[in-house]
Length: 193
Image (tube, rainbow, N blue to C red; front, side, top):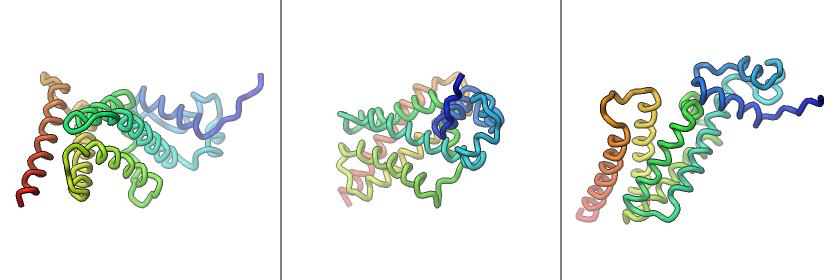
């Protein structure tokens, strides 16, 4: 039986599946090699190191998030757009917890490709804010604030950081309402100044 050649995408796919099913802390190059049916040294043709694998997982996680946010933002505006983007963010994290965790494990500062991936995500959020009649500078700050809020909530949720018996769905819906009210309030204050 002929062996199918291994490529970087297969390595990242296997690593993402392991991270999502068992958690990022369970991920090792040895485990990835075992899943792929190869010896660990074979992976080094496709990833330079464990840190390189984390970087690739973080990039993949951001790409998946970007695709979900972009799709969610189509055809909606105002509060509905913020809600759609927020829920898409949360659903993506819940479906891919290990992959999303990888976005925090490798620093993006100074890495042009990762920085660009983050900027594209912020750009989609900024486009979703078009219905709020914001000036460009304010829209950029609001988009970054939304990114921080969504990331923070999802990071806490994926680490079981929201104590029970409160329903996380209700809390998240309240967060979206709070964020939208804050954006509107800031907009009115700036228009009156």
